[in-house]
Length: 136
Image 1 (cartoon, rainbow, N blue to C red):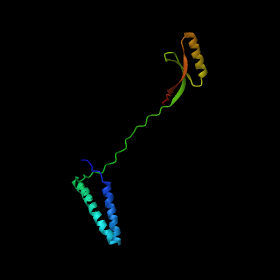
Image 2: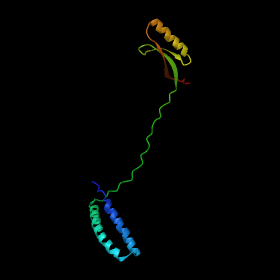
Image 3: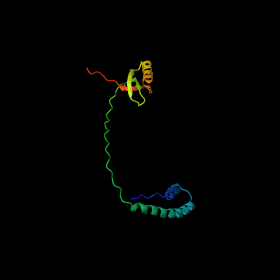
Image 4: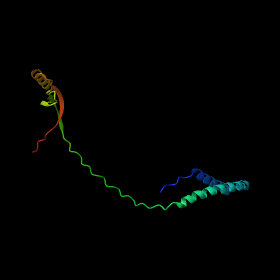
């Protein structure tokens, strides 16, 4: 069912009429009261239209209070320690040999030797490998 939009001009007129009634109750002049009564009758007709529209609406259904959902348990991934080694690769990106991280000079020398012997390109690149922990 569609909601009815509010007529803000009519609501403003109702508010102004109520303000005038307050001033009248405080004792302002009677001449102004006659003019206000005429304006209020016009405002009253508009207010009656707004109220009639509100009566046509069906009563609202009560909603049940929503239960708080339980937070989902997320499994933390197992942290795997890794180390960096130097890998010598051929032109097909196949690893030929690995060297420990401090042995960069030896890895470069091996790549140069293989390039000279085989006649194809060899290069050195860092690789991260998981550290295998010893179980006792």
